[in-house]
Amino acid sequence: MCKRLCVRCLVLLLGVVLMISAGGRVPADEPVVKRVVVIAHRTAHREHPENSLAGIAAAAEMGCDYVELDVRQTSDGALVLMHDSSVDRVTNGHGKVADLTLAEIKALRLNHRGDGDTAAQRIPTFDEALAALGDHLQLYLDHKEAPEDMVVGMLGRHDMIARTAVYSSPEELARFRALTDGLRLMTPHPDDEAQMRAWREGFHADVFDGGGDEWTAASVAAAHQLGVQVWVDCLGGEDNVEGWRHAVEIGVDGIQSDRPAELIAFLEGMGRR
Image 1 (cartoon, one colour):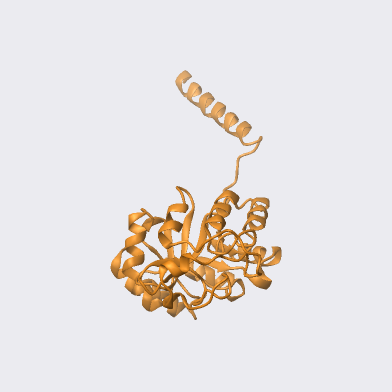
Image 2 (spheres, one colour):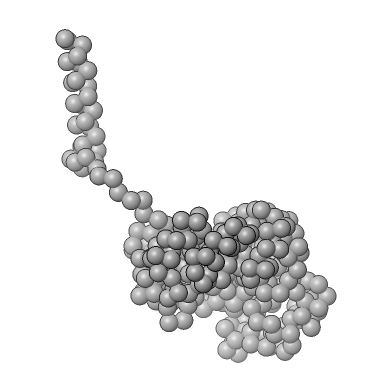
């Protein structure tokens, strides 16, 4: 009898301790709040030239999770960062990347946002950009025009395979998957759930992309059912509090923005960082 009483007392005491630690009440089951990934579009390019080493450093300083970079190949086989097929918009030079040598590319100067305000920056090679990512910043790689095996080889030399998500066409993503299982592969916005499943089963897509207005809570949930994340591009008219809030409310996993510092502050205010 005494032993039973002692056991009951211990159970009651434990219950009191748990209630006190929970603020005087037994905590109810609550959903886990998901942290939303922040991607700096073309690096932190509002403050620095896009696809620049300075933009990479600024994105890291802001606390971004990923930086988005665009890769192309020069006429003599080097891999460099450039969004457009030509250098005209963002440099003091002219011509297509594919028609210029690395030496010619390196002789150019990057403009800040292409507005003529010349910055003391040169176009980085892909090798230089990967070295600049450091130990924490991850890579959202927009595969523009470069041999897949060269890209994978360079990522491997920098131990970046597991820290990279590659965005490209389904055909090119299938070639990347044939080269390595370690990369995360990101498709354009799928047309419907059948296409989601086809891409997931065909080459094991890891992330679906698309504009924030292309996704709904139901379509995001369908992607999650397949084990695929959804990263949306909140750019242009969607790159604001309304666009970010919509993305969070429908359950996306990541947001790409031209205003990453402001996005991080917004997500912190929502308890999503």
